Length: 271
Length: 250
Image (cartoon, rainbow over all chains, first blue to last red; front, side, top):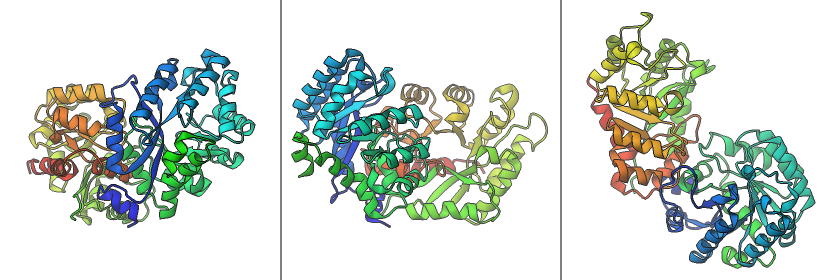
């Protein structure tokens, strides 16, 4: 039994690995979630041994992104180094306000951007361009909600080529259209797949590792929607080499975060 | 350090294209051994390859016969069209062959879970205190509520509940003491186990994985890293399902 699998099977907190969760949320959503306080999130992380989580607010799917970003900022301040922030943006505000919100969040120490198309705007909406330019300049990670849709892939491919210094994280990698996800990784060297998916389909992690390589996969749980302890199980228990598990849970994310230019998160997360 | 004993209440034996009689049992046995899961309640899987329920059940019993860690969970179908065993005989036969739970899947087996179709089946199951595994995708919470209300001594295990369903699930569990919920599969919401344990009682939670559709380890880590006490994990991991098995009237 591998070291990580053994620890997980026994419920032992993982000690010698800086596990980074690159996909989390704060805030209220439409369905009930038992405990949405940031303290509950950190307590859950402590039980598993997760060093840091990068969160966006649920308003990444809505329009009240400024309130959401303020809530995320408060959680970052309350739990420095443990909770990192993605700045949520709403294209409906127009390019000027989008750019200002992104600048404000970066100045406040946010780590990256979270863009969700549930707000009705395509990822290539021009209003996002000032934020994308900032992300490119600062070499930020940008987490995009995806669900295997070829239109989403086409938009993100265009952006990944236009902004080559930014890191593009595709949420829910392999949830459907596994071949499409693999093609995105093959075509764009700055694209990574995240593993968040509610039901943890059998064999998906192994297939993704085989098709795109462990070096291009990062772990994201989608907490509070999903339980971090549940989402990490599919990696801990995957039939892949121990070193690949370490890349997915830690090394790849640390590399993405360490690329950030002058990022306040850099010192906190990587030291 | 002794490992938490785990019995999986939500597993399936894949009967699709199984030329080698031993292979389906060997696959689940190997996965259980790898993850140190001691026992499993296993149903025929998947629906599309098990539409001949009596034949699927026969294969299931055959496979489980040589693997004592597996407890068969055969498919129960009402005999309203007089094409099957009588319901009391069917349930008695299942129990005699080692079953301690049945699966119902009304839509795939083309019947309605209503009294004018399935009263004899549910009364026979209730009479034996035989647990019934209900997959949320096949039955829905409203139908589970109707069954639980109509047959209050019938233990129902609800599996495959999605992470969005908490509002309705809590209401169901509060209204129906004979309903238990399986912890794994898509019921993956943050703090879900802890909340349900506090709200409706730890006795209502039963460990299950959703294997072979779902990575079994996800359910294992959700339980092992939960904020439940060791005693509570024992109940969820194996105690609650074992008690249901023991209460079956043989």
